[in-house]
Image 1 (spheres, rainbow, N blue to C red):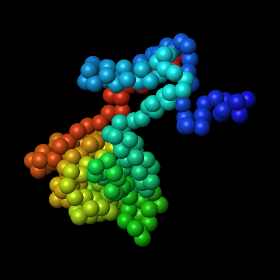
Image 2: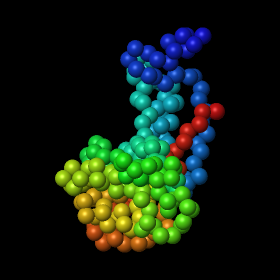
Image 3: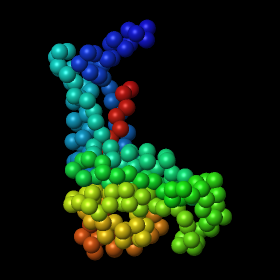
Length: 217
């Protein structure tokens, strides 16, 4: 049975969507009121892919792919899974012309004991203050150090699953990043926004909820 399913779903020319004579869809999206037209256009395009019954069986069905924002933010989230910080897991990806040039996650510097093994006393003591005593590098810092200003170049975008703090924002400005895209908010967002926007950097918040989720029923 498994072999028969594989033969049906995986054709020589690549993965194809299974054809059905009747399809019903339920569109699940809590943020439909925001950016309505863009959302509707996106849904319509995906419905055409899934439900075009007139499509010839010889035609290749176009594959559904995430947007660039979604793709790079997922990479940032994946990078965060490598974090060794006790407090928070954060991931960052720096991109230029849709190509990844550096990644980073937060944690103690190389050759030091990992934070979750006691390497950062501040994090392990549960101290919510005295941030200046924290030994952990932030995800943005690690990515910027890996890339360097020369590799960042012009028109680079920094994706981070959490809004950069004020200190990281200053470093983002200095290295020449052109755009910052973040997902989750942070307690010093406003201070960071002031620095980034005064430097002419575009700041956007990305939400996976804005991308339609289509459930076959």
